[in-house]
Image 1 (cartoon, one colour):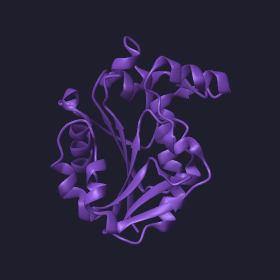
Image 2 (cartoon, rainbow, N blue to C red):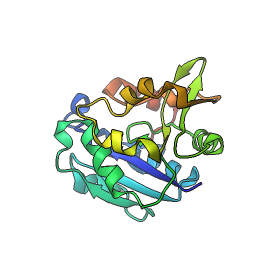
Image 3 (cartoon, rainbow, N blue to C red):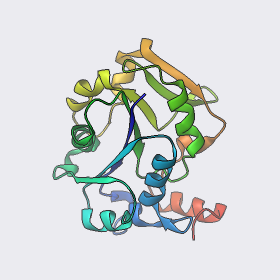
Image 4 (cartoon, helix red, strand yellow):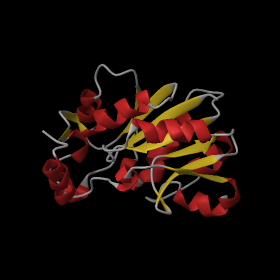
Amino acid sequence: MRIAGLVLAGGRSSRMAPRNKLIETVGGEPMVRRVATVAIAGGAQSIVVVTGHEATSVAAALRGLDVTIVANPDYANGLSTSLSVGLRALPKCIDGVLILLGDMPEVETSVLTALVAAFTGPAAICVPVRHGQRGNPVLWGSAYFAEMMGLTGDSGAKPLMARHEQHLIAVEVATDSIFQDVDAPEDLARLKGSGATS
């Protein structure tokens, strides 16, 4: 299967202001770089990173990685705009895309490889599950790209899951990292307390 990776990294980090969480150091490297590195290691054949807020600084944090960086001029209008920009930038003729959030630096490569292994084709939606709860990232088949590009607001593609419940493939994983994003200073403090940051 031809799988691409899409890292959404255009947010304003409003709850972390004036700091941009995506360039905060996690495990010795910028958060967004850590996520992109996991995407590269997880089986995606090409990676697109969508920037927005402080795009130059975020792009600098990715320097040297084999990723394509695209800027979303409408990032202030919500996550859906970055999703649309990213999907349009993907290579043609791919079967699916792993969608990663730039503020989830603890997601493990094993999660991505499990999603890729479970993927059955363009009509599949592979979701990581832990203790009955769904998390991120999600591997979306290309059959849903057009619908995803028509979304608006800041909710991402989550509403489409209910619409296409019959195509969901639940992939059991053994890590809580699929739930752990960094939205506020206390989230970063938690990472520091666990020794994940430097």
